[in-house]
Image (cartoon, rainbow, N blue to C red; front, side, top):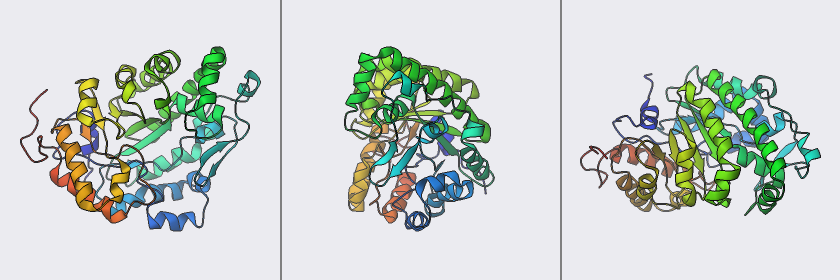
Amino acid sequence: MAFNDRFLRACRRQPVDTTPVWFMRQAGRYLPEYRALRSRYGFLALCRHPELAAAVTRMPLQRFDLDAAILFSDLTLPLMGMGFSLAIEEAVGPVVERPVRSAADLARLRPLEPEADLPFVLETIRILRQDLSVPLIGFLGGPFTLACYLIEGRASRDFARVRALMFAEPSLWHAMMRILTESLQRFALAQIAAGVHALQVFESWLGVLNPQDYRAFVQPYLQALMAALAPTGIPVIFFGTGTAALLEAMRETGGTVIGLDWRVPLDQAWARLGKGVAVQGNLDPAVLLAPFPVVAEHAARILAQAGGRPGHIFNTGHGLLPETPPDTVARLVDWVHAHGGRGPAAGGEPWRGW
């Protein structure tokens, strides 16, 4: 089977025959075959078993004509390799035992050695590279997001404890961010060496910061991470949620592609980001719970905002919801392929320049 490089070409803002499409959390709870597997294995057990993790990664590709696969894993796994215990609780997500609240707690955070600490992730990548006909996207949580879990212990509405530590104990904050960033650089490079075609950096909770604090407390570390990945030449997608106020700062940070959530119009966001970057997004995942004509209407609006410009990857603005009907996903993928990559009315003349 021929290799489909449409996604990679779009990442590099090269011409494509139609808009590529993939979805965050496309391998997950909305698929009945995944739920059947989860009835037999815990989430972390699936992540730690390379053959099973590879099988879950392939599941949506066996149903839908997607243009990329996203590695089945979890962004908090590096924390386990760095000496912290955590559990994945249903309807809660990752929960870290004994969170970081002091310099003594930070002393428990050891540098990550990916081949020794997360060999199952790298083996999953190697297995998938043997037979995938679309690019494989690896991923990692950004240093801020991992710091949020380390300090708060779990997801939070506003991460007030995280921000309080950041402001009150900046030396502790920066020490933590240095350790996390250096470890994530090693993990990202190990995934690339194992064979991923692209990487997505999830800074899931970045939207709790204003631009000034982002630039002071987070941006230098993400810039160091992006700089470490740049020599590899692979596309890097930089994604966060609630980041409408941070777009210009995210563009300064780096990355081949900026992922957009659904709270900002794609055309306005792209105008603010400027010419030299691709964009990914940004359908509200809740739209997929509506009748398909409504889904198509929202998708058409996004394609019209993209205007056929090279460098648009269609995706949801966050992960697919567990209630998402698989048939709707299948219809949407086909609809985007049928209507994508063309002019302002999602069917007009191709884009001919900025």
